[in-house]
Every structure is written in C-alpha cells, then in structure tokens.
Length: 610
Image 1: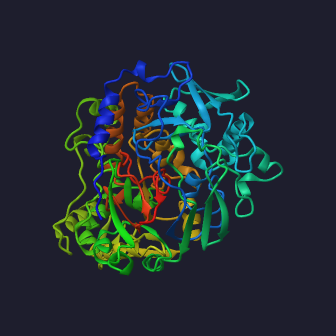
Image 2 (image 1 turned 90 degrees about the horizontal axis):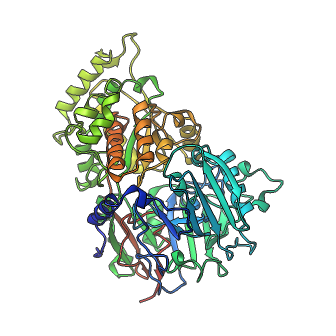
C-alpha cells in the first residue's frame, strides 16, 4: 500500500530556509552545557523534549524483523579495514556520544553524553557522559573508554575515522565524566563529528590486536542490541538487550528499538533472496527495481494481506549510483574518453528495458535536494567560488553541463556519433572495426562486478552491446564478494558499480569520497581517483562557511565539478523507498526528512499483530 506522510521535500526546504535566517553567531553554542547542537541555528527540539517527532513512544516491544542481503561476511568488527562485514553492523553496534536526528539537516542530541559545550569559534568541544551509561556487560562507559576509542579508531581503525582524528590537536579528560577535544584546523563541523564516533570498551582489547579482529572477538558495545547468534555467510542475529541502560534515561531513544530480534539472512544471489522473502523466511524487503515491484509482488503472502507494500518519500539528495571510471587507469585519465563512455551509455533504452521506463535518472550528485547544482551557467556566489579555478576545471562546470540524453532507440545514433568524435579527439581511431590508439593498441578496459548482482550484469550487457558500435570490447569480470572488496580496496579495476548516499549536510566525509588525499588510501571511498584542487577547495569552503548561503553555494559548486568531471555514469535515482513487509511490522506515519535511512529501520519500527 502507499501511505500518506507528513514529511515531503518542502520540509527539507523549510528546514534549510529556517537555518539560513539565523545568524552565524546565534548558530554557535557558547561555552555552556547544551542538550544538542546544530550545524547552523539551534536544535529544533527543546531541552525537555520527550521523544523524536518521527518515533512512537507508545510502541509495544516484541516480535522480529528478518531482512536479507546478497553477499557474505568474515568479520563482525565493522570498525576496521580487514575483512568483510555487513554494512549495517556499524549502525547497530557502537553507540556514540551524540545521536543524529533524521528530521533536521544536521542536528545532534545527547546519547552517551548528557551535555555538550563548545567554544564560540568551535575550536574545541567538550562532552559530559551520562552517569547511567553502560556497556552490554554492565560495566560503565568511562572517559578512558572514550579517549581510547578515538585514538584507536583514528590510528588503526577503518579509514573513515582517520580524517577526523588528523584534525584533533588533543583529547583530554577534564572531569570525572567529561572529555574535551581541541582541534588544529578551522572546521565548524568537527564539533559535531566529535560526537558521532562509536565508543568501544577499552578493557576488551587489552592484549589483543584490534585491527586483526574478525569473528572471534565481537566488539562489546553499549547499544540496545547485541549479537546473540551467527553463522558466517548464513545469518547474523541480534537480540534486544533487556538491560539496555538508555531506556527511560535518554529522550532520544524513547520509542526506538522496539523489536526483540533482528536477523539478517545472507544469500548467494538476488533470486534466492527474493524467493526466501516470498515464502516468509524474510519478512521485510527493500526493493530497488520498480519493474519487479510492479510485476512480481503478487505472491500469496501479499494476496492474503499477510504482507503489505509501503512507498516511503524522502527529501535527501539522490547521491550517486552508477558505474565509476577509475582515473588511475590510463584508459580513463582523459576526460574526453570518459565523456565518450557516457555518451555510449544509452540510459533511456536501458531504463525502458530494465524498469519499463519508470525510474528517473540521477542528474547530479545532490539532485532531488536544495543542494543540487542549478541548470545553466553558474551565477552569484557559485560563480565566484569557481572562477579562480577556471583554467583547471571542465569549462562546462561554469558554462553549464547536463548528462547526454538519447532518443530512446537501441542504436542511439547521435550519441554514438558524438562518442566517436570524442575518442578521435583523444587520439583514437577505428581500424578494421576496432577502436585503436596511436600506438596501434586496441582500446579496451575491464568492468568489475560482483557475481551476485544480476541487475547490474543485465545493464552492463546492454552497455557492452552499445560499446561494440564504437569498436570497443570490454572484459566483464564477475567475482565473489570477498574478491570484489579486495580488488576495489586496492583500486584494481577500470570500471565498476558505484553507490554513495549523500545527506543534506555534507561535511568532512566529502574528503573521503573525492578528496585528493583519499585518492591513494587503500580501502578508501574515492574510487574514481579524483584529485582536484578545486573540489578540495569547495569542500573546505562548505566546512568553514559561517552562513547558510555560502554553504549552499559551496555545495552547489562542488556538485558542478563532480558532475562535469564525468567520473561516474549515473543510473537510477530513488526519490522514494519501496519496502514490502509483514503487515504486523509497523512504523509511524510521520516520516523524517531523511526518510528510509540508517536510524529509521529497524529503529522506529515495532511488531503488533492485527
């Protein structure tokens, strides 16, 4: 069923507009204890708030949610580089000092910390722990645990934690339950990021190598759920901690964590996962293929009403999903070649074939949001920010860029013609039906895919047929999940599937996604290998902006640079989420502006028969 919701795109616009009307000085918390902190303006909820606006404080507890995933795992420590862990583990494990509201662009409220203080210029931030905070084994969460967690994650943890830690000048205990972070750079977001790192138990790891842990040492956490059963590559089961310390203590968690059991089932491919859902072995399934949603969700459990279909809106950016070209590879170092590859990708025909033409295309990294680049030439502050780099960025980042659009026919004549011209400009010509370089070497490249992804394989099959019209025959390599991670961690690919979600409050994580320093970090997220002085400058601007107007302009300018850089061939965007689930699994009617996002399912859901 499609349910009505109170939150639509307009809400995010109003939230951003409200922040824009608040002066920078009012935005910065003074050195007084506060219950929350916002990037701009003040937190929407008052100090005495009872629960999040999208949570149900009267929800019953009990029941189970069983979801599926395609792939495998060999680690239950999501905080390190080694091994493959399920993506959702880090959201279910390891509470942080503060917690993020999904109904505000970037606002945090106290979780392990009862209060936050920060300097007027946000050069330091101090947290005071709640005296009730406990790990799942009943031991208290201490300042020593906090300091150890930040130092360990920042030095030998996953690279996602290193960027923040490099900007910390010192971490010091300032009281029995208080800890202060002092920063070595000007960066308004750091005061918030300091509240978002997982806090782990120091005592657990004495004498052990944290960076090598996998299945044998499951991190002890303070979260409301603990792992109670697992079998590598088959399932992971969480149980609600009946002695969870935060219940009736932390307003933020009131109405959350209602389900007794969370279970993730692992499958070798999408077909097996969907079949398990159809027979009731899985009771919640997120669907990304609109054609399958319309044509295959007619099995018995849905016909009898035991399962239902929910369509859920959101107001966050589209992010980027598609096929990334590795600029570290000689084949894709030239933007003209990347542009040719994008012209050869016949999205309109692919969309019609795969989804019946029902799925809109991503038009930029921040499309579907107020942060997206505007059509046409850059103007105002966006133009002002880009002009100093005019000689080193794509010309149409300033003059205006839009993705190539085909006529929808299979032959895609006009765009193939443009692609041929671009390849010729880059020094390639067709000889005896083969695209060939000036040295006589045929132009080819490898497309790396996980063998479990049948939809991506179908898209690439159509794409390779289009490339044959250019005299190009790529190699398509299918590997299992472990091999895929190993190769993408080492950037050992020419082209591969790519997906990054983006929020309404881009910040330091942008350096991880496309910052120059991250381009050569093993296991990093900058898969395209972009190293751009202009992009780094826009990230710095959005981090140091003291007004919402400059923040918006910097983000829109960065969106232009990324999109015009032709690094990723975009495919579909999901402006709604589609979830089919057991009718007894419920969620509130009020959706947050971030919609179906980590922190919403399973967090706000509950089980209630009838």
